[in-house]
Image (cartoon, rainbow, N blue to C red; front, side):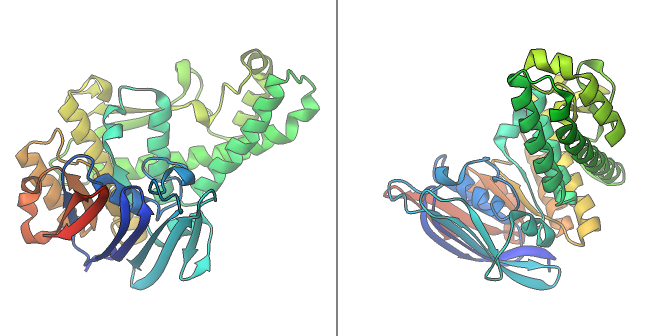
Length: 368
């Protein structure tokens, strides 16, 4: 049996799903159906059972099914390391998202203590080609899977930086106004940097020590514009103080962990990921997600729940079969979507198969 899986999932007025109730076992879940039927919405609902804004990064009021606009709810029965938990997250119309664990109100970060959820979605396919912000977000999501408290450090840093940026935009020059904020940023920033470094080391080790059909990468975190990489609270505080005049001209903070970039070198060819083919970039992303899952299996004691949206895109049949074999070897409950049942033929009875279709404007889910 898998050590971490959902045995029940219910959606109420979530995106295209008016009402869905699923009873499951610990095997992977293959979801197929036409584009727009509502497959990704199921994965997004599961992603809301982890800290953060889910795989679409949507605001609470953007998720409720139209036209009812009565709010939304996701509930699940989670089996985690021999314990069972009732999870619920919801938002009433016009309200904020709330979380409860075993019928008790809980902060989002508490979800990360009892479960781990990782994902790969089509929007990430261009991760290596677009701006550094997306790669930082990708890295922070992986980091959060290893260290749930990474979210708290990130929130502290962002809040203090917003206040500092407000001072900069108002052209405040008195150093007294900056001292406490910069100290907060330096302390939280150093924790962010340490968490990211640990996550990268775990990924690197998991890739190098695995027998896998997917490519490996050399990963690094780099400062922008070939600047110095700041990795301590003291160095960060000194940099914030030294950059005030430059930041005043820019109206924002130009140094710190919010400016770094994630770099990947495709090991086999010794080229940057951004120079690889589309298929190679997809395979590399899958390699990182699988490495994340293997490392979490060692650290947490069970493989995470894995969400793979349109996973078959850019993968040939051999690599698709290799992916399914690795997921089953991990004993992970992976939720995967694709347009046709044939894309999951290699899984056969190793997985549960769901078809999602449109039923008069609402998504319908049936077991196959």
